[in-house]
Structure formats: structure tokens, C-alpha cells
Image 1 (cartoon, rainbow, N blue to C red):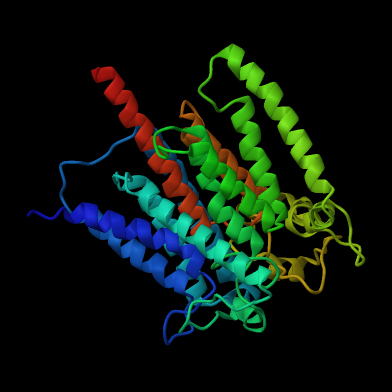
Image 2 (image 1 turned 135 degrees about the vertical axis):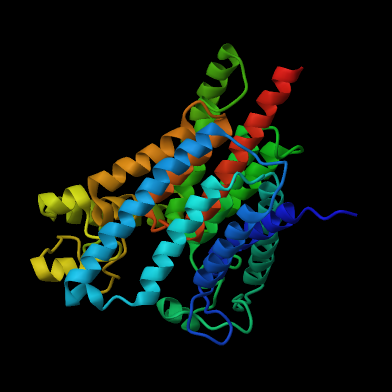
Length: 424
């Protein structure tokens, strides 16, 4: 039996990327190096190897290639800007060499994922397995919680990274409400929510009980009491009821009316639950400390960008260089606090602050081919990625790569369907 080396490498790469968001909290065995950073480096080596393996079945899709061209320009530009700022001042030179290498590795991984012409047909199978494993784990945690039992669900034998050391004092995965193998509610929801899109926006991936499965994932997401999760769930179902369904115009209008009513009634019912209402209030309403989650996750990034000099607004300050730049130029945001991580910005504002308007143009050029003239599923996944990017720090991280390969797999599936229809 002849083994397809390229196919085996692809499955391995896909599996590593899909476990990155789960393993991000830990150091690699016996080291102080983050597990996610190690996996990214390994994926980069495998992608280079896969380019060297000859294979007749090489998938070419013009929209992916065009997206890759823009991202390569962004990667080159982002690297130059970051290295320039890190080279001219001792404030920036304090950034470790390992951090800069990890940054460049992330850029290379995403570039090669777009350029390698890989067959991503295995992505959904691996992702679906992991999603339902998380669902089973979460349901088991809820059973334990009902019984009055809380036990940590952190991965045994692994130590937390310095960025996640605070987790050692928490009941991992069950600190507040069950979140499977994730430390935070938002991470749990962001991992599961693409599956809802696969269920609602396409009939090619989830063959049986699509709506029921989407409802189950949606309920678990809402039960986590994550603000991000609730917003993403309603966004998915809103898109399904109004735009991304396969019905004719008349039935789509009827479904839209019914769907809007269902969403409205559901949202009102949720706000009558004290804990959900409190969670939604925390998103945009200041707490006793005069602060809301939107202040930290959304407004602060835009406020800091507005305070940058015109040159930095155009070209940025380099990756994770805002804190030293703010110290030198005395930039203070009205949303700054002493207890939050300074460099925490949403992916959307990370692009603006770190790489300026020019970097943002490159990213828009990278996203447009992944959206324009694509299937409902692909458009839905891109919209979810953008929505998450407005409030979460996912740029160049495992979640970013996970969403990218899910998007690429949906594009390839749609292209193959069109090819099949043309042949028929």
C-alpha cells in the first residue's frame, strides 16, 4: 500500500493547529517555552517539508493565492516595522529575541498555509471530533457541578506559562461555569462557534441533524455566560435567518420574520435571567470600579490609536511595542488601568496600533478574496473571525490559524462543488 506523504503531513499540520488553542496555557515539557510557540515552529518545518514533497494532487484556488499575496506583503511590512523599532532604542531592545522569532514564525506559518496549495479536506473531520470531545467534557462538568463537585481539568504533567500562572490558583475548566479544557469562557465559545456556522450555512459538512447540533452548541455557549459567546451565537442565527440559507426569496422572507421574532423573544428571555443580565451589563456598563469589558477590549485600543502621532498612525509602532512607545512619548489612554495587561488589544486594534493604516490596508486586501464571491459558509466564517477580532486578542495566535484553515477548507469544498456541477 502506497502512503501519500503529503496527505499525512497535511493531517498532522491540521491536527497541531486545531489543538493550539487548547494547549496555549502550558509550557512545553521540561522547558519555559510556551507549547503553542513550539507547535508553531513544528508546523512551519512541516509546511516547508510539504512544499518539497512532489504530489500530482495540488489544490490551486485563485482567491486563496490572491489572499496569500496580500498577507505576504503584510508579513514583510510587519517584520520590517517591528525590527526597525526594536533596533533604535534600548526601550525596545528589552524585548527578547525569542519573542521576535516567535512573531516571525507566526507570520511565516500563515503565509505558507495560504501558499502551500494544500488539500484541506481533512480539516472539518478533525475539528468536528475535537468540538464534540469538548461538548462531552463540558456536559460531564455540568453533571459534576450539579452534584456539587468541582475538579480541575488542566492537562496533567504540564506547567502553566508565565502569562497564565494565575490559573494555578483556579479550578481549571470549572472555575465559574464549565468550559471543558479552556481556562476562559470566551476561549471555549470562540472554539465552538465555527461549528454552528458549519451546521447552519452549509449542507456539505454536517450531514445529519444540522439544526439540532447547532442548537446544542449554541445552548452550551450561552450556558457558559460568556458575553462574546452570546453575541456570536445571536450573530450566527441572525445571519442564518436573514441571509445565509438556501431558501427561495419568498420562504427566506418568511424565515427572516420568524427568525427575528425568535431572536428577539430569546434575547428578552435571557435578559430575565439574573446572571445573563449581569453578564450583558458588564459588557458595556461600568462596574463599581467605573470600568466595563468594552472599555478594555474595544474602546481602549481605538483610543490609544487616536493618540498616536500621525507617522505612527500611518506605519504603526511594531508588534508589541506600544508600551515602550507610550513611555517615551507619554501617551496615556483614559481607559488605562493598573490591573490589566498593557499590551492587550483586540486583533482589530492590534493591526492599527502595531502596523498602522498601511498594515490595515494589507490585511483588508488579504480578507477580501476570502469573502468575495464565496459560499455562505465561507462568508459566515469570515464574518465570525472579524467579529471576534473586534473584541479578542487573536492576531497571529492559534485561534487565528484555526479560523484560517477552517475558512480555507470551506473555500476548497465550494470550489470542488462548482467543478463537479460544471462537469455534470
